[in-house]
Length: 299
Image (spheres, rainbow, N blue to C red):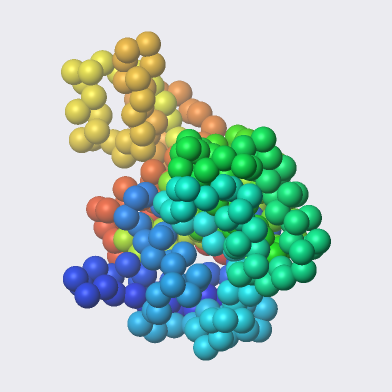
């Protein structure tokens, strides 16, 4: 169990990146969902001991993370969104080097771990190639491999571009450890995470089970296709959650307690509807929770 209590972080420029964040994260996949600039990376860096908070606490299975950073690092796998590599070194050699740093000093044990991870991340055929020749997706896979060295019990900051390739891998990892998936892609959380938190402007908007959050919007999401000319009027008059083009015309999803007009049909809500409702409400009224989703917080 990872326990985060009343965590705060304000940078020198005055930006409050983490605002009184409290989360209880059990074993398994946990989604941290929010738009760019929401504070996800700041929270991940703090959990990974790369920066200190101004106040608050982090405990992992009884370990006081802020007082015993080395104790956490022995159990941590961390993959930031932008993972730098040594361009002239091969994947196999650098992964072997990281394995030594993680404490895999036995030659046989280390080779077994490195070979297995290269196979798991589909890099075996490219293991002798210099990392500078890797595509962006291959570098991301290498980052996942290094994050998993030493069988970490806490994996933070995963933000996979090739998410379909790694759905099964990440789910399998999450059976034994805490995996925090930091992303702005709603589909990642829907597919992978039995629990989640939504964050914006450094503040947790809700946390709980994705399905519980979705259920709170049942019978309150409506859809219709409108003309481009009429779209601004609908956006002004109604609580529009999302707009997408279908056959060249805007299709809108609207949050409302009852049918807005005869042209709307009721649709099953999904996590994207919850996400847009939360984020837009936070932008307009940071002090108030979005309507209809309070039950998800206690799920």
